[in-house]
Amino acid sequence: MDGSSALSRVVELDALRGLAALAVVAYHYTTHYGNLVGHVQPLPFGFAAGNYGVHLFFLISGFVIFMSLERTRTAMDFVVSRVSRLYPAYWAALMVSAAVIYTIGLPEQRLPLGDLLLDVTMVQQILGGEHLDGSYWTLQVELFFYAQMLFWFAVGQLKRVHWIIGAWLVLAVIYGQTAGHGVLFSDSTRELLILRHFPFFALGILFYRLRSKPGEHPLNITLIALTLVAIGLAGPPVLVLVAMVCCGIFALFVGGHLKWLCWAPFAFLGAISYSLYLLHQAIGFALIHLLEQSGVSTGVAMVLALGAALALASAITFLVERPAMNWIRAAWRQHRPPLART
Image (cartoon, rainbow, N blue to C red; front, side, top):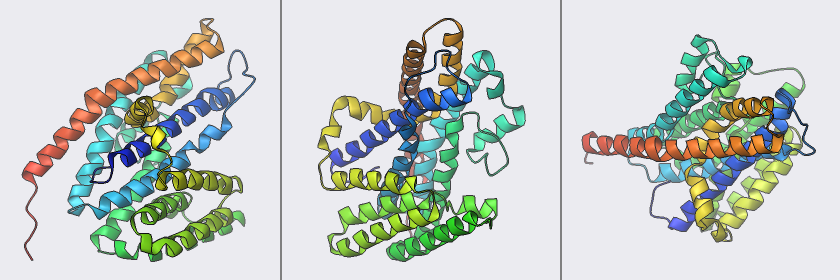
């Protein structure tokens, strides 16, 4: 999310990511924990809608990654940028989560050593491993999206992104329709091409184009509408509603109507959102279970788990994620080869 665009725009995107992360936390601590483990005092409410916060993440990634690639010097610059952003915080969160789980966690949270080692890769799912934290499944999806976009950048075809999106949407619809009739793509093909999730990334790309290329408005609006149709054809009907809500949020963002998200607390939440997402579920479940079994009320246990997740996320963001990212990027800038003169 570097670049010369107005800082308020970047802060708005970060704040949206932070709010989406908080929605996912609320879903996991209420509805998901209740279904998987069961609260000692069953809650009279849940927050199932928070599960769809990940779809807003995908839109944000589509917007930001395409913006980043348009400003990227070389493919290796992009790789270093993404690795420095994702992996240091992920490895730190993995170690902290493992330390908590193997001391106070539920027995079913404790993975075999082989799976735990696979988790270091961030693509453990396609390698046949289990996630230490259930939230990690989206990271593989994000990585494969980055890889696909990096490929199109490397072969100089990002200028044909509308054709790429169109072809990808056709594949997503074919996958959805054939799966509904019991004819399945191979798991590897489905995951590598992120066929279940790509339409949401596509919406993010199209909203970026809508913002940055005024002359393309009719084309981008038409493709946004076709993407919504594709989502309806490829998946369950609820995802159309989710996509429409996400599109409404992004329409407000692109139109400059979300400047209130630049408020400092939202900006801070956005800053720690990645680490919060990485840390909250497995650690939160372990803490909620321990506290409830110790006689703490369910509501208080959830609030304390959220407080712990926010504190740990802040520590990893400012003690690991930011310093490591800055160090890796500075080292790369110092040693990267110069561009060939043409």
